[in-house]
Length: 205
Image 1 (cartoon, one colour):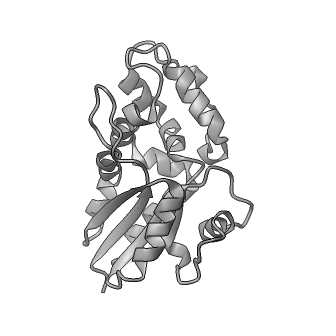
Image 2 (cartoon, one colour; image 1 turned 60 degrees about the vertical axis):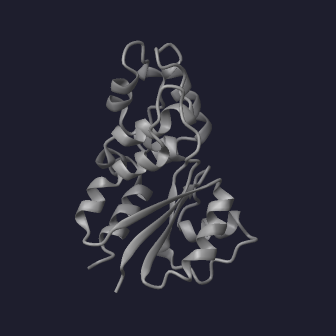
């Protein structure tokens, strides 16, 4: 029987904005709040650090958590090829790591990066940045996973550069934005996010 779900997430919890102390851990906790309410077992979030280090820690620890369902969640930093799974993608970009003892359903990606999720909820972005936020500068593609990561970041920076909060910064703004965006909108625009939610929601069934 699975006792808990443990999600190993790429992200730095030490960086905080000058006027905003909402960490990525708090942001992810709020983002997964509805999901946590759906299942009968607790969800533990482990924000580990850079992508490669997160993969390393996940692989080292997952085999010892026999009573937990462990999940890896990192940025893809690029598009997946057609019919490519998160597991085969991770094995390809991380050939020094061995995923043979990891199941497909344990491997998940933010495609192409966490900030792609933000673009799915332009209304909350506008609410967060308030006056002088330029939504027209954001990428238009409704399938956010198809937007190149550089276009996502550039769009966020251009959309926010004239606001009082200032140009988008990962350390300063990401935790707070993640906390307020609608996970339902992200799931509709990001198939890999939907896959993550569906996988975890079925763990205790």
